[in-house]
Image 1 (cartoon, rainbow, N blue to C red):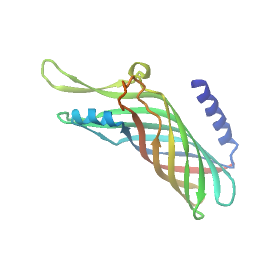
Image 2: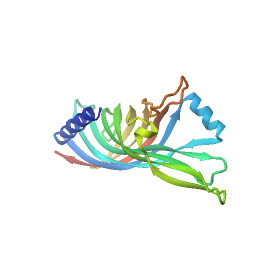
Image 3: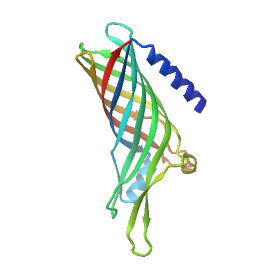
Length: 216
């Protein structure tokens, strides 16, 4: 899987460098996790609520005009995804943040000269991540929150993510492009034995970015 992802990464990088228009972008995501039905029951039993987490994103873009109204866009993005759990009795939220490299091809439909709508799949590979863990001080009884580096194999977290992006973009002065949209993940990040239960964990989120375009 790593070898396939590396081939896709290099191929898309070459594609972007040869594109008619290239650009750089940066922004942020409001990410969360879609929990399976049995996983939701676990959260309810814990008096926990899953909330959006703010993560950063940055990358490179490339595009080819297919017609007067259709454009093939590609992106290589560093994207942070995850969630925050608010648990009754805890003063602080427990955050899970995973750093992905996403490959994103999409077809863009030009609504006006400056406004476009786009849709396309994405595939991402997790590079690293952190997860907050709650510990109770046996002397004081105080709950302490500390951040730990995620060991994907030990935590049985899948490193492959894939899904669908739907968005809109607005181009200002043919140089700056503003993007916003929604990302929905189809891959189950919970790689452990679920024992017939629906304990799935899938990414989702709202994204915003600002890009600067260059003509090749």
